[in-house]
Amino acid sequence: MSVQRALEIANQQDLDLVEVASAANPPVCRIVEFSKFRYDLEKKERESKKHQKQGRLKEIRLKPNIDEHDFETKLKQAISFLKKKDKVKVNLFFRGRQMEHLDLGRKVLDKFIVDLGQEGHVEKMPQLEGRIMSFVVAPK
Image (cartoon, rainbow, N blue to C red):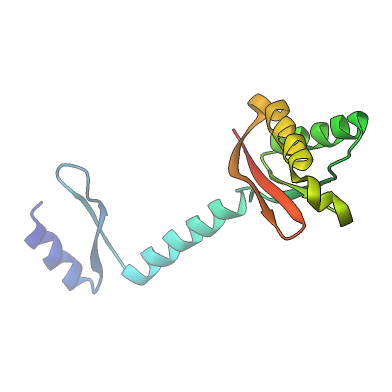
């Protein structure tokens, strides 16, 4: 059917000619009420968004003089967050004179990044903001 004929039919019925699939050859059109068509599309989008899981940002706190066992516990927690498809922000807090030894904190964060390995990739590299050095890891 030609476009002109479809437009005539749509006008006779007080409806609109809506292009559904423009990529198809020839393009696919429907004769429908446009406001109802748009409402149905928005309803489908809302329904699909309802079933999507929003990636949350979880936070893990460290200190520069963290014990090995505590480090392993925090690492396991980060891995479990990444497996649940959550992003992880790792914060390393400096107190008092610890600010003079930023290199110790940097070593802890570098070891954390290496130990995460295959579970995630660093989205934001470690940087110092005041007394907190932090970075963000996203799941792979």
